[in-house]
Image: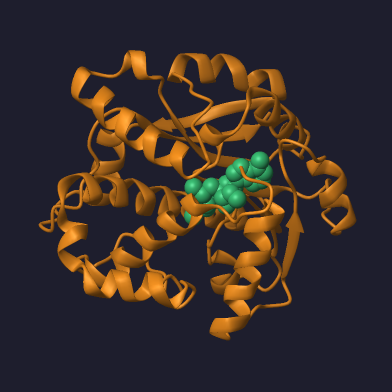
Length: 285
Ligand SMILES: C[S@@+](CC[C@H](N)C(=O)[O-])C[C@H]1O[C@@H](n2cnc3c(N)ncnc32)[C@H](O)[C@@H]1O
């Protein structure tokens, strides 16, 4: 990422969650009353002006992936609170995620970690929109490529002995292998009962030809925004990699599994396509 600029992809993902609130049929997959208000005014206006754009198949498929992963991450978090005594939520590369504002658990502390430039932009947006920021939220600025996650979390009062639900959505493909490994090592050191949800992309060469073209188009767009894709896994390579950090795959979901879980019976065309993006739920072992 550019040192001084907030993440452009964070804005685009947040706009897709907001488009879901504005343009998709009820019931929504992911209810987020703050998804629209947190956006900068020009992004909000663009969404309201262009409802037809969100119905294009490529756009609907991307949005479907974004809302399913957000829903899945919060489902795992809730199960962790109910069943595994989770009292900390760690949101890595938070972008404009609003879970902290909607956190229904008074005794769950939320640590939002993000690149310093993105995090200060988000804090400006929160202040401008006058959304209520609860005292259960701590902001932790960290550049995964240059700073120690462990050190920054310690300064922020994170308790490394508490079971923690971590979400890391839309971030892994943008990292170097070293940054991924450094973060995974910290997460794998958390107590048993801790969970991790993240999405990852499969490498171009394992995709069918038409998806390779989609991959190329998306890669070019994010590279132009200064946030190139750098890191890919296959389900097999991921299942090999995670145990190095004391993490084990619980579920590794493809489009079919997510469609069946969250999007069956929809009539509005909100549907995941292709095999590039996958969603992994891992636990500390
Ligand atoms: C595509 S956005 C996803 C944001 C959010 N998780 C969501 O789903 O809406 C990518 C996020 O990763 C963060 N990110 C990318 N590289 C990073 C780095 N080296 N250190 C910290 N955060 C990084 C960006 O600041 C941004 O918030």
